[in-house]
Image (cartoon, rainbow, N blue to C red; front, side, top):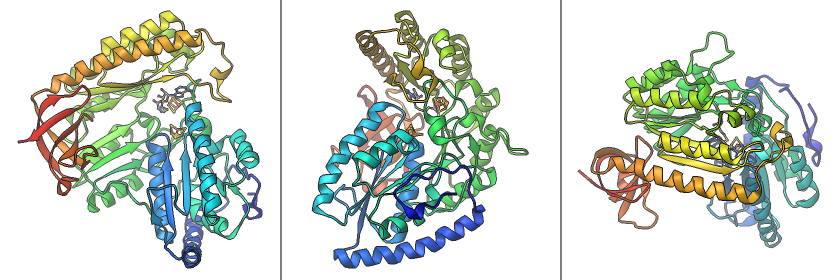
Length: 484
Ligand code: SAH
Ligand code: SF4
Ligand code: F3S
């Protein structure tokens, strides 16, 4: 392992030198030092140092941010919503280039704040930082950044925090990969009543457009025992809804001898007292088993929502994307799901402008969207990612054709989503209240099992509780309702 204490260089290692237990002990000691350093900093500043964690990207990053915030609070920082805070951490995403550009755009702004508050510290972590080009760019053009770390060494954050607070030079600690899954980091949950739970990390699917396997590493499943213990702890803590997280939850447990499968894991989570709703994300269509469908169908707690990214409606494009299913197989799967779980809401992700995609291929995506009738679809324009196979494929449609096709697709997606969501009109559904409505304080916002939102009269005391709500007014993608 390279010694990052020297700072101002990038360290790449492929293994963890210490055992998980030794590492945990080491980080506990670092936490004690961090508390002293943060208290000293507070003395210099004349107030409790504040921190602000800004999250880009997916649920995985959101969960990591909760761990980062947990460590910072434990060290004595006070959470702030403002990037004026004494310590700002950007937890970055690199799945498409616009995610990266947003980070670069905002960094300049942080620099001007730092000029006014020289004690201010800035850290960047997450998926972007796993890219060597990005590190090089930040080292040379954004020298005011204090700390860079990647996705594989998050659990070392207490130690990195100490190094940063004791150093004026940029601290960089990025690992290419790790097999270690270190448990037991302090966590501050964004919502007291719901929580994400990582069940696996990384991805082995290598869809040809996607950078995730390169920045998140090989697929690794956590042990079901650890997962269940975490869910039990959360339930004791008042959590009623869990979202099991992984890039491809359907392959949970693969390659671990004696480990249970994802449907079996769901059945176990279902047994945990206090948990009333179970969600999961993301399901790869190629691995969605009949067993999973049966478990969902028979479950009282698994939500009536499935995010099932299709990416394209053309079998030829799907082949080039290395998705390992055809249009027909996907449609058969949807038909089976609709048969077994009639009230299931299905959502998806779609990429437009994949190199090799023609106007005819895009037409097929549009007809597929019409056929499936998604409750919602996230549509993206293809963004070439350095190091992925598709980055070297030849572009087939012009930018104009892509943006026109994208707009057409979007209209179809929205029309179909409105149509699909309108089926709920007049029904009484159970809503879990998540927050007071940000536009109208007389309303609260609740989420239905199928992930649709409903706004209805209420107050903050209802947050985290379930209420039966009549869906009285359809506003397209959400409802206005009243408690019954
Ligand atoms: N593991 C999940 C997806 C994670 S990334 C899955 O396989 O479904 C979330 C979404 O970003 C993907 O579903 C895809 O639609 C989109 N995406 C990924 N790489 C992209 C790229 N290079 N350009 C545009 N969209 C991309
Ligand atoms: Fe990316 Fe494909 Fe893995 Fe999803 S399954 S994270 S799209 S490589
Ligand atoms: Fe983005 Fe990393 Fe998630 S690239 S989508 S934050 S896994």
